[in-house]
Length: 171
Image (cartoon, rainbow, N blue to C red):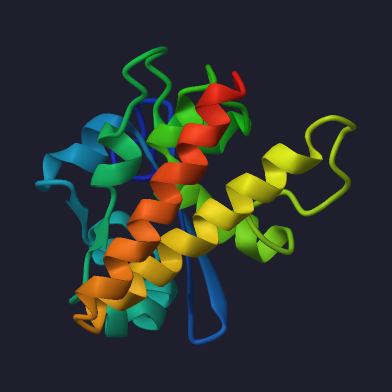
């Protein structure tokens, strides 16, 4: 599909916006998306007067596309835009690079972002320790936020002890 702005290059960015109950789809190439300082004003992209009237209320707040266009995995070079287009990552490190964009999606699509199913045999104890460490870290952060530093130190020591036990077991 060609870019809606220049009508020359292949579009790599898809902007989908619902305004007053009407869906507006805009397709852009990287060059057109980056021309205006990583901001796109919808009115400049749409030539149809009817659509311009519909979206006039949002024309004052341009859409940010810098994350889509510029964020890339340092390991494989996959951009967020490429992932959105194909639905596939280039490597295992992409999950960490795009984590802040993935978590809301995973939370809405699944019941959460961590595994809650059955645990394979032999890993039950390790998983219990990991869950306990996570719970203790949350309690430690709560204690720090409420300036209860003595309790925070106790939680810190328990966390270190559990982590040491896991290391000693070779896990």
